[in-house]
Amino acid sequence: MREGHTAPPTWAFGLVRKLVGSAAAFALVSLLCASVAFAEPPANDRFEDAQVVGPALPILAPGSNVGAGKEASGEPYDVFAAGHSVWFNWTAPSDEVVTVDTCDSEFPTSLTVFRGSSLGALTEVGRDSNSDGRFCPDASGVTFRPVLGTTYSIMVDGNGFYLPEGSPPVTEGSFELKVAATPSPPNDDFAHAIPIETSASLAIEEEFSYSAWSDGFTWNATKEAGEPDHAGDPGGASVWYRWTAPRSGHAEVGACVSFNVLLGLYTGNAVNDLTSVPLESRPAPCFVNFAATAGTTYRIAVDGKLDTGTGLPAMTSFGIHASMSISAPRSKSGAAVQSGPSPDKAPPNTTIRRQVLRSQPPQLVFHFSSNEPGSTFRCKLDKQRFAKCRSSKRFRHLAPGSHTLEVFAVDPAGNADPSPAIAHFTFPSKVKAHSRH
Image 1 (cartoon, helix red, strand yellow):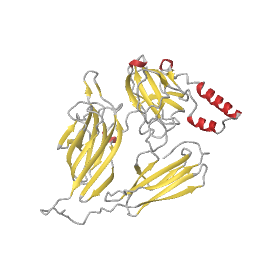
Image 2 (cartoon, one colour):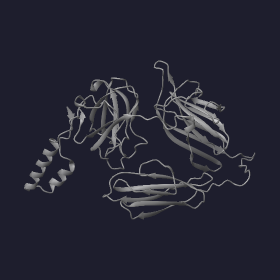
Image 3 (tube, one colour):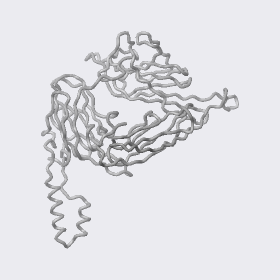
Image 4 (cartoon, helix red, strand yellow):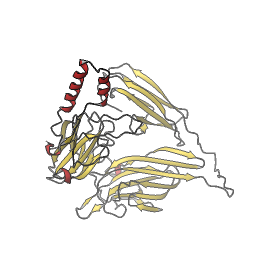
């Protein structure tokens, strides 16, 4: 039995009160009760009625959770789930690593993958509460290595989480369930290491803080011939990054999602000719502290601990960071000792100028500027993350409605504008919903 909608919404009663005593009131209540109480739920509303998809990949299955409810008992708890869940079943035709997502949805979703044959005895494989058009592909889907012949249950619900000062989100609508093979990471090989660029710096009194961040994954990664064992473990699913220290001083690098993640830190220009960097400490296999030298490029490997039982390395998605803090030396009196010219501590000021190109469809172009020559820029559209961008950004296809673009400049000394410039704009509704950045 499902917990469904059995009463008219509260706004209906307010409208009815204005119509009391009229025939329209009776007709309106009858219509509302009939439309809500007898709305047909989706065929896969219940776990036992799950829609079977696949098994061949890729799978693109259109779906809807409009009118769906929640199992009266036994349905797995999800703090984000809104209570409009539908179910799918997929039986793995191989042990090939797959990713399940609902990126092509018209509302925020909560996606969970389970294994188990009954609702009350499910084991969670993975979940994702941001798998929709707002965040994909940076933070979307559940990736895992299936067991050949095992049937997996996939639950799709609306993401009902919001802060009290906000408005409740839409939690019902159409979506497309996708199950596809997971590609190998682009930085699988040492030669294709991804740079982690120092994206911001802060100067507080005499202390300077630098940080850099990047997302990554080790699914389907391999280990190259001549590659060292990272953190003393054979591993076998490594990806590579490189980071150049902006200053000399204490630094740390980490990629900790679990202790099954391994991190190696080196200098050198070839995978079979690397020198391990002396560490000040290693709090965990996925974390290191060391003394960095300005201008030195450090090679960072992220791998997965080898499971001796299966003979396979752990694989996962992660975020990797590199950061450092430097304090100016002080004299015996406690005053900061200045060596050479005073460092530039003044943050830049960022401005935005908008231009509309009369093309079909129309194009919006935003030009950025800074009061300090040589500045670079970081951009953020709507709820996306800040990322490095050029001094002009063009939008031709966006979802109809209101959008917000935020930009801040970083000057050559590494100072970041603490108050991003903001542009609010509306994209016309007649333009097809699609996004390009």
